[in-house]
Image 1 (cartoon, rainbow, N blue to C red):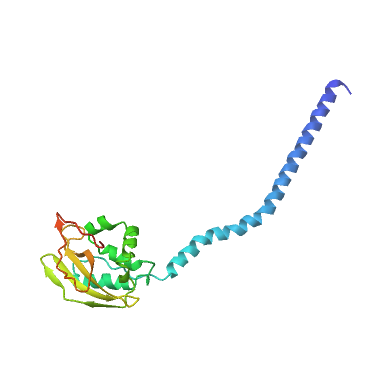
Image 2: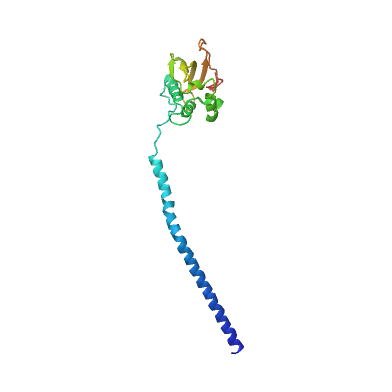
Length: 213
């Protein structure tokens, strides 16, 4: 065999070896895919059905009633009733849900002084106002209205049986988005024999006395 024929035979042998390597690689890839394919197929339905399952959970979850909101049609007495009943059933709908309702009915000036909600919750749970939460009964005096300010004296029997008197003050708002809505300006804890004639000062629609002070 001459030199050129020898080189040619070596090239053919190398190409044949390369072909076998490529074929083996292809077969190995096919085997790997075959092994993994069942897992991929098994996972696919889960990936497709997960959003549907979440949607089903959302559709079957119990819907809460619409939360009370300030409304121009609500009278001062109705607003105080909503706040009192919400605090009496503070955790009935959601943890501190009653306090959240009271915060919604706090006037914008009050919210600025006592908010955000997390801080407001701590204020309501302070010793002076904690008796409002889960109280047993509420004996309410007459609502006294003077111009755009209304007050009502409320005597509570707290959950522990203690008797406590509070003075609720609400005012009619003059600016959007709460124009003509009665909202809470202040809740003052009184002594049994304390008069409730204290005024809540207002200047340019901003309160000088917060809801829980």
